[in-house]
Amino acid sequence: MAITNVKALTFDVFGTVVDWRSSLIREGEALGKAKGLGVDWAKFADSWRGLYQPAMDEVRSGRRSWTKLDDLHRESLEKLLVQFGIRGLSEAEIDHLNRAWHRLDPWPDSVPGLTRLKKKFVLATLSNGNVALIVNMAKYGGLPWDVVLGAEVARHYKPQPEAYLTTASLLGLAPDECMMVAAHNGDLAAASALGLRTAFVPRPTEHGPGQAKDVKPAREWDVVAKDFVDLAARLGC
Image (cartoon, rainbow, N blue to C red; front, side, top):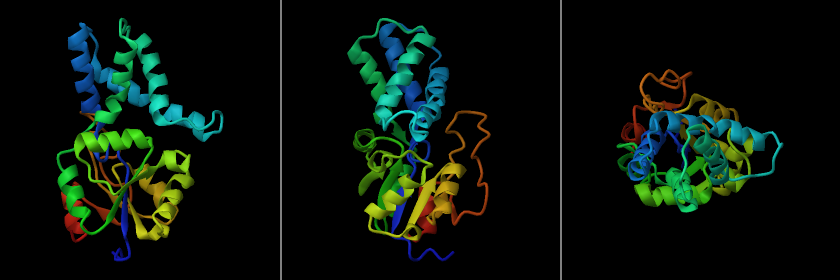
């Protein structure tokens, strides 16, 4: 693997670095206990995530102007409150629930792996999450990013090319000096098509038990690692 020229690692975040599903369930259960809500919070979390791509598609297609992910999440949340029959929440409580995405727990290997990788590489987010969301998540979970980039900075959601190319450009690097790290084959395919190097780190429980998608590499990526600590070892950190 001729990856000696890679200077920066760019990371997908939701699912790859943090466990969004378990975190949303945790947040929902805490709210449910406080408010006496009988809600299937696993189903709620999956439904909320299910509205993620359709909401971004409205922006990608040009049918609506640039809208940050926090606002898309809020619009989706308001639909789900009706769908799940959740009533009686104050505006502050709804806003706090929407910001559950700012409080997602890292996978157990994320912080130790990133800490090792940071010794050798620039670590940048290349996420569809907006800057405030990713910064707050980093503070919450102790994620040691060097810089927060991605969709909001580029004003384009992945997998649009601008998200990847703007990130590389702002780092002062050519695409092949960046390595995209993701648990999603589609994300890596989009990055690879633009010249970025690729590292696949599967998260086979991202979507809960019985996950069938992205449990193994779809093709021969530059690096395939079992977790971030293994990735650090494979990259000489």
